[in-house]
Length: 123
Image (cartoon, rainbow, N blue to C red; front, side, top):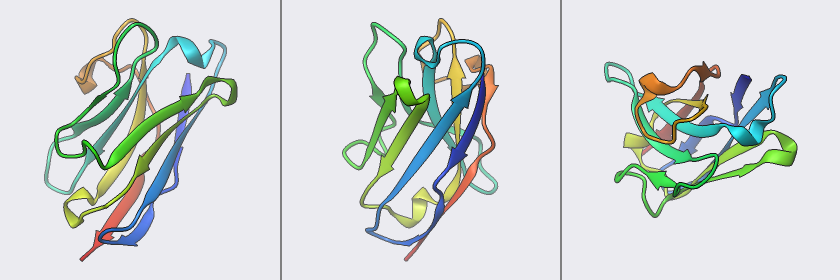
């Protein structure tokens, strides 16, 4: 599956953005777990949110719980990350990823990655 993330931009603290992750490929999007990850300058890539393909619960990083919402529309081959109450520390490049037979938070277990989208939150 090929992924493309979009929707990043510059927003003031307290504002909102919605990222989209659009998939293309031969296999049905619905069989993949979709994860969102981010990487700030000088820091390692970190888990943000995951929407498993089946049988598991949606999971969020503690730092974004209550502010971010992950969703997916398999009919549109698209996953979303709604980000509210943004903080300057949310500034990073956000990437979506897909995995088969895995529903966790370890980015090393994701085989398919989209090009990231920059999110900048000003104070």
